[in-house]
Length: 293
Image 1 (tube, rainbow, N blue to C red):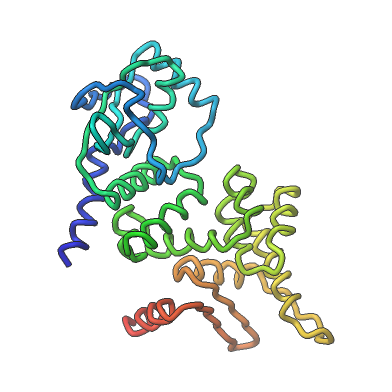
Image 2: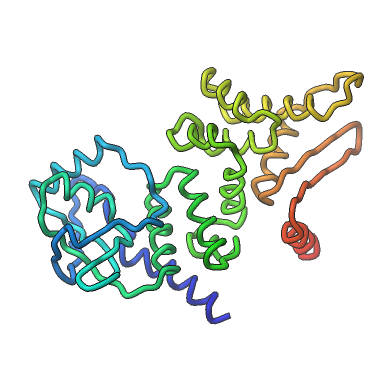
C-alpha cells in the first residue's frame, strides 16, 4: 500500500518540478526561472537510453537552438548522477540537444537522486504532461514500466492523470505490425485510426488505404468493421446489413472505456453484447466492473 501511495505522490510531484518546462510563455506574461543546482560541461551529460521519446523535430530543435544562443537555457535540464562527474538526463533532452546545436560548452542542471524506476516514470510523466510523445512512444513507455517495474494499468493511470482505459488503449497499439507503427510514429495515422486496425486481418493494407484517402476515424472504424465481418462470415453466408453509425459509436465508446474489443449485434427489440478478452487479468477486470454495479 505504501509503495502505491509513493507512486501517486511521485507523479504529482513531478508537475511542480518540471511540468512547465519547455512550454511557450503566453504573450505579455513572464515565468520565473527554476534555479539550477549547478552548471556542468555538456559532454558530461548523456541521454537516457530508456527515454520513451525517440523523435525530435529538426526544425523545432534549430528554433530552440537559436533562442538558446540569444537567451541561454532558461529552464535547467533535470539529471541524475550515474558516475563520477557523469549525469543522465531525466527530463530536458530536447534542451540538451538544442544546446549542443547552439554550441554551448556548459548547461545548467537540477540533480535528483532517483533509481531506474523513478527516472523512467519521471521521463514518461514529463513527456505525457507536455504531449511530447507520439502515441507509439507513449505506449512503449507504459510497456516499459509494466514489464520492468511491475506497474499495473491502474497505477499508471493514477500517476499520469489518465484513465485506466486510456492506458489500456495505448497498450493495444503495440499489437500492430511494424509498418503500421511507423505510420503512427510519423503522424500518417492518429491513435484513433490505429486502434481501429488492431483486430483486423490485414492492418497494413487498411492503414495505407486510410492514409491515402484521408479517412476520418469514424470512416476508418467502419472500414475495419467491414473487413473483420468479411473474415468471420462463412463463405456461403448471406451478406449481413452493415451496422448503423449509432451502434458503431456505442461499440467504440464501450471499447474505449473497457480497453477491450466490444461488439454489439442488435436486432428488433434485443440483441447480443460481446466483450473479447485475451488474458485472465482482463476477465477479472470485467467481473470486477460488473460486480461493482
